[in-house]
Image 1 (tube, chains in turn purple, orange):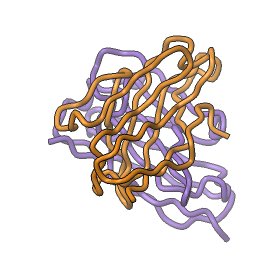
Image 2 (cartoon, chains in turn orange, purple):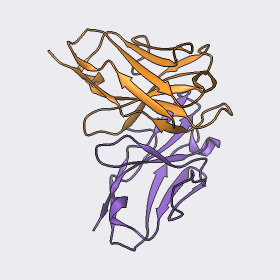
Image 3 (cartoon, chains in turn red, purple):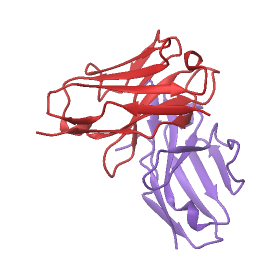
Image 4 (cartoon, each protein chain N blue to C red):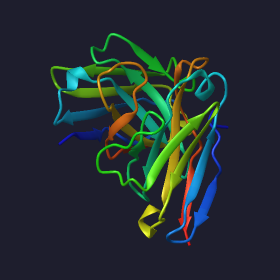
Length: 122
Length: 111
């Protein structure tokens, strides 16, 4: 059974930093591209960042480019999101998401974690 | 403002059929990118409902179906049940943004 367990969320002041982690199990982590998707309170889903299976290629939404960095450690089956220069607009539940297959391209998200809440406030 | 446009809400009585539209443009749905649909029950993570426009993952009832034509995709739910009350999101990819994009979401109310 696929399991994705996010951690690292919490309350942070504007301008601060936070590092999210997503511990994966139940599948061959190094074979699947991964993403972070966020959802502001009462709002819709927003794709944030993606990384290929090998970690060699990353992509970020314009709203976080230059501030957020996605990475992975395939030896530890863990996905990361380093978030810097946080603003109130970054307040959201952050989900770790696994693509449904390894066929490449923009595959849909077949599995999601339960999410971790990030609150940016003074 | 989402790249993909969905109606904010739809409703229907138990047993009825409802459809949720997802309107894109020539840089996403109209460019041939596949559309996927997710169901988000209250307080839970999203769940993949339809992938590659028309396909259902195993375990998803055949009451749920998807279609795509031009710049428009649709999700149809037949034989509405109370448990279908949720938020539904379409998702595709955009060549201009070079990223995945979501619709704004549609809240389904079962009357």
